[in-house]
Image (cartoon, rainbow, N blue to C red; front, side, top):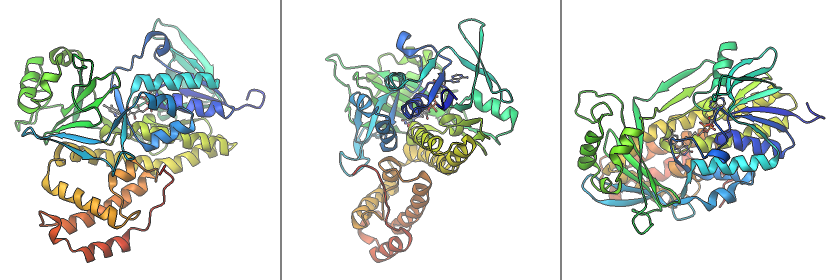
Length: 460
Ligand SMILES: Cc1cc2nc3c(=O)[nH]c(=O)nc-3n(C[C@H](O)[C@H](O)[C@H](O)COP(=O)(O)OP(=O)(O)OC[C@H]3O[C@@H](n4cnc5c(N)ncnc54)[C@H](O)[C@@H]3O)c2cc1C
């Protein structure tokens, strides 16, 4: 303690680490943040991967509480829905919500991180760059860092240490070695590669900017998110290894020339928009995707994990950052509400762990939906019925995507209700190719019986 002030060491100045630093510093905590990379304010952002992210209500709300919503939203690009590029060349916008009050936002990871760093700095947090956590002496409460520019090492004492150091968390490894966390990692057999669509010669976007573009192709897909500098970041998700079935993989499409052949065949409308396909293909190695599950997130009153360090997930619901931002608010509240950090960590974990597990599951399920179902007639009929039921039973039948994306109800509740709703939708549309034959009495009765009115604090 410093003059009665409480002290937190945060590992990682990424998205969650810098947002948590703002929240704690504003509440009068002494905060030290240790980041392995250099200061992005001096030499530009080095993140490299997943250049833009979809920001939804949960994340926006956390940013608002930290006073960060204004600067972030000024650079965000609205996405009204999925612009589906079908294999036969048709293009169709499938709205995410009812109108423009239910949309998601594409934000640039580097710009977002810079805004959060600046605000944390202004709030009084101390940043230490070029400090890669190497090991932790939990008995002495000492952190040991390496500076990757040379071979120097630096120590720092801690009262509590918070791991916001991402999916490959070094703090998690140190905690696990000291007292096992019950860790299980599930690497997806699909990986991703990022490409870019530059602005048109007149400086404008080359496609409709206010949408998340998606090219579903069954076992693989491309997506593209707009950036405010009028570019799109294109991400191809595909199997890493070949399974001999003829479905393309990063093994069979290994060279830039093979990539061009794949795009000519499967993404012909995207190909002319990506002039640097070959160079980008060769320069960007595929990125891994996976989920991390832990039985415990904390070590008594000494250490706790949050964000990707605690519960990395696959990106197919666009919720990893949004969930990490909700963690920041919950952890700051818990630390503020309990003088004993062990009690704060326990309260945080009890609140957030079931919700993290729920969104991890929903994120995996959503991959199938995105790559395989968005052009499936049965799936589209269920979406149509979903919209009818939403209007027929307002606040009771709330579409899955709406609960996850435009509301702040716990993810676990969204999952529970989504499973009930999916059954109702499947039963009601079974064997039908239009809504004409729906047994409305049975559907209404099932909704009344199984789905109580939903309360939510999200903005109207
Ligand atoms: C392809 C892709 C697309 C995605 N799209 C979305 C999306 O649309 N919407 C969404 O909500 N989420 C999305 N996500 C998920 C999102 O990127 C993560 O959930 C989010 O970045 C988690 O934030 P974090 O702060 O926990 O971890 P990170 O952002 O990974 O930050 C960790 C920080 O810790 C630092 N660090 C790492 N190790 C050490 C160490 N040993 N010592 C010191 N510092 C260290 C890193 O340099 C980094 O700055 C996507 C992810 C991927 C891969």
